[in-house]
Image 1 (cartoon, rainbow, N blue to C red):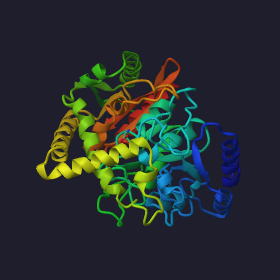
Image 2 (image 1 turned 135 degrees about the vertical axis):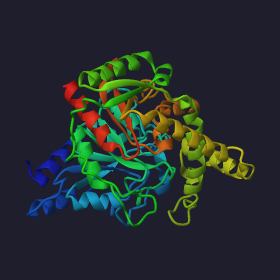
Image 3 (image 1 turned 120 degrees about the vertical axis):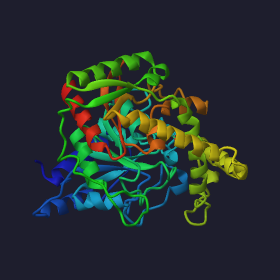
Image 4 (image 1 turned 180 degrees about the vertical axis):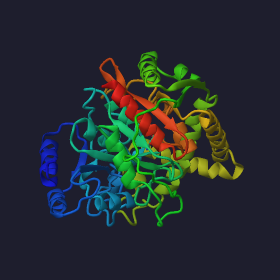
Length: 436
Ligand code: GLN
């Protein structure tokens, strides 16, 4: 094992030469922090690992800009709960990663600090919104990173960059210190190069937090309990996925599912009849909650009024959220979205009732080319059709590289029951073993 200082220095040197624009800010005290870890006689679970953090999570003394001009000069005065936990286990924060502005996007193109490059598929978007958290793993610029996932923002870039990403059950990981996109959907989760790394980070950050009302009392030692023996597991495959997904991606996913079958799992067909209704349900919810969350950026506290400096997508969401909120006394949109959310949640839980996990694709199409900006927001939103149901239902979901299509990575998505993270991680590890 290299010392913390050796490990962190190695990554700092690589970051200096990096061309992916994965980082918005480097922690100038990273070496000092690594030295402190090296001095400890007894070290924690993340001893000396270099950890990158999405720029919407508060890390004391570093900028939490959300990749927006709105918060350009905002320096966090405290550590989010997940950061306290990482530091307690001796992880070294190496820097803050690039992202879509305020986590609104699936491409990594809307950052006020320039787009992020995909090291695994040159010339293509890396996905988003946790773009830099995924690319910093793919480009080998850190050991583990944190992202946030409201409708797919961990799983989408994990898929496009060929790395492991995990969105936990809603409430498993404290959100205290995360700048919200939509608070009823947001979850923080890890990226790593292997399942063990993601499981270790999940183990560190999950569990009850007295500072907030929505955390759950759960954490079963995910890394310690990893077990790739999945014989006897029932894996659901969803018939509706195929119709929505590029057939080349489906072919790759089918091959992956076959590998899981060869590992002793039983494949069972299940159905999600209202899968497509997830998108409008998700976006209506996000517009309203995001509008509300942005009212504090009125210029009095953080210097700049969000509407004056933000990009097009953020402004679109604020205006739509305002409109929908005004119409709300007649229950026109938001109330309907809430009703649909209940329906989708019930369907997802029903599909999971008789299986251990559901396996399928993560993103229905390949990432578009950089520079070929998508102007129609609905086309952009369609990237999320396979990831939003997990957020609407509050269930956990992990992504691992299935294979490649035209040289571009595609991710296998494994979804599980509420608090069913261990089984998902086990299936992912079984797959990791089969892929090698
Ligand atoms: N692409 C989705 C959106 O733009 C998801 C974002 C996220 O998960 N943060 O809302």
